[in-house]
Image (spheres, helix red, strand yellow):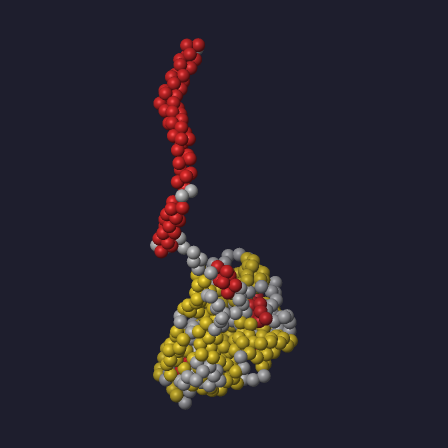
Amino acid sequence: MKKIIKMIKTFFHNIGVIIDRTIVTPVTKLIFRLTKKFESSGKNIENWLSSTNTLLFISLFIAIAIFIMIDRKIIVFNDNEAEVLQNQPVNVVYNEEAYVVEGLPESVDITLIGSKTDLYIAKQSSTHDITVDLSGLTPGTHRVDVKYNRNAGNIRYMVNPSSVTVVIYPKVSKTMSLSTEVLNSDVLDSKLVVDDIKYDTDKVVVKGAEHQLEQVATVKALINLEGLASYEEGKNTLKDVPLIAYDENGDKVDIEIVPQKIDVDVEISSPHEEIPIQIIPKGELSFGLGISSIESSEAKVMAYGSTKALKELKEVGYIPIEIDVDKLKENKEYRVEIPKPVGIKALSVNNITIRVTVGEADSIDFKDISIDTRNLGEDYSVQGLSKDDTTVTVTVKGVKSVIKNLRSSDIHAYIDLDGYKAGTYDVDVKVEGTDSKLQYVSKTKQIKVKLQKK
């Protein structure tokens, strides 16, 4: 171990000797010689610098050097900068009552050039008046300058674009009917509907170039229900409802409308009707079985919707609910969602429970059931070609206890003549009955009838 330490010491000692011999000693000798030399010549340099001619030549050299650097832009004393003010609004001067102008930019960009100080002051200004002056111009196409009307001081400026091409048209007008469109009606409670909309005028005046007026197909008041303070039954007033013009494709037409806005009274109501539920079994039960009873947790529901939808639903007389009884072998309970008829927004009950009880089935034939017609055109009359084409025998299948309460008047046979024109046709016979627990089958599948114009 001692030998290793001794070898390391010897190694570093030899390195120190080499550095001392090759670097330290030569550099020290050079410094010493220079010091001696300047000590003897220091006074001579001082006397040379004190000479008038020497100072003159040095000043001339420095002046020439500075001139060259400035001329070659090596040194720049100009601190000008550029600042761009984007999307500055344009003020247009013209007779708005007499003319319509197309081609005007809504905004322009201004480039300001000047010192940092001047630019800072200019940017703090709240207004940058940019004007396109069309006063005195007649209808037609014109090239006009865009002017920056501001005392810019020491600042230079450029406007982009500096000029624009505009087309001036004579302004014309016409009167149009006003319609309404309700927006965001889903903010209302499902039991509420917009019953009526009232406003002061149903006529508005549209103004613009003749080609613009030709595009206008309709003018609508956009009634946004989100703007209502409350959503209660009764009269609700909307202030400053905007009027918008549309073309035949439903696209907005940029045109002047007088008045631009109106006040609207929105009448909100909650029309409703109590409607029975009718359960309609679909399919055939297993052989030898029939439905002895159908029980529902609800017999009627309250329906909410538009007056028109409620009227149509009342004419139908019930809300149909279909259940699948195909191949049914035993009693079964159904949990069913009540379907909402078209135009109905809400029901007092959305789901009901239906229990179907089955029993041993029987069948009875009902003869001489008259055949009615449905959907026959007003311009036509119809007649069966024989007695067999006017009445049918209907087989009714079901549980005896249910069938015994059925009468012939409870069975309806009919043919659907929707779309039929004059001529002779074989038409399918359809049968239905008042008791949905039973199945009704016509023994005659088709009859031959003749349609002719009245």
